[in-house]
Amino acid sequence: MALPKADKKRAAAANDTPTQEKKKYEFRFRFFGRFVFAQHADTLDELEVWAINMTHNPDVPSQPHRPVLTAPRGFTARAGSIVPDLKVMALTCLPDDQSKDRLEHCIWNIDGYDITVMARGGFEWTNKDVLLDFEKLTVGNTPVTTLNALEAQKSPISSRVLFNAGRGYAQSLFGHAVLMVRLCDTPISDEERENRAGEVIRPADLVEVTLHVDQPLLILRFTRRDGDGPASSIALQAEETGDDVPIPTVANFSNVCRGSDDAPVDEEFAGMYEVLIDRPITRERLVPFHLDGLGGPDDCFVSAYLKYKK
Image 1 (cartoon, one colour):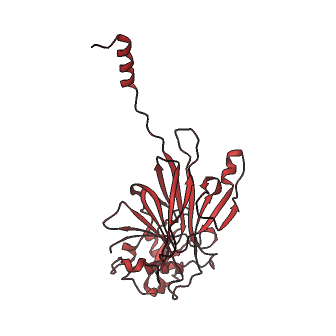
Image 2: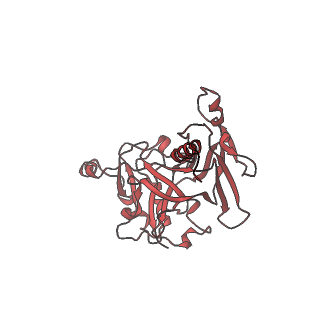
């Protein structure tokens, strides 16, 4: 039986209505400090971020580093989550009431944990060119690691963050000019600096991983690397704005020390090579020589990239 004219119009209007896209929520994770951004050669749609134990090799002069996670208290769901180790006030202005949610920050010590960001969809890089790459730093050495190197016992890795989704972007936030030199060849002369002017690089000291997810709650699953104790979690809550353009919920991972002695040679970077099985001896490892000095807030922010095999 034919539809009445009014029903035909309603049916046509329904067919013409565009499909409404599902709202996305944005979460952004920032990494500062001694991290290795690692990908297995067979699973490049995943990312592991390793916080390095910088005192693992006693031949490398380094102060202890403490990997921590920081997030605004107003965007953490507290029921059933890991209790923070510390709470601090952020250095920020309060132009309106909305900023109060970002004023107090929670800090968790993540040493000894594997953390899985519970989101799927595949990871990819939008830019990693400025990350120091172990494949280029280890000429004549094979930059591979095995499962043994990832075990908790006597491992140079103090904690791991695992991503199965998101986009990674590496950048040089402070823009320091650097020459890579063998540790045993430092310090270098002014003449060598001039002769190698074309080799100057500005390595990444900040990496951001951004995720767009369907739900306003993102779970970070924690398991002890030594297998002791139950799994636990931290839940991050997205900001509800009602707008089409999401405001990111930002959490920071850092793995830094108390400061350096302002020496231009980043000797501490030599400790990053400990994740490699076939690694150069300590004195022959390439490390950053800062042409514009070292010290201040960017003491040990330079990180690295590794594509590895088991």
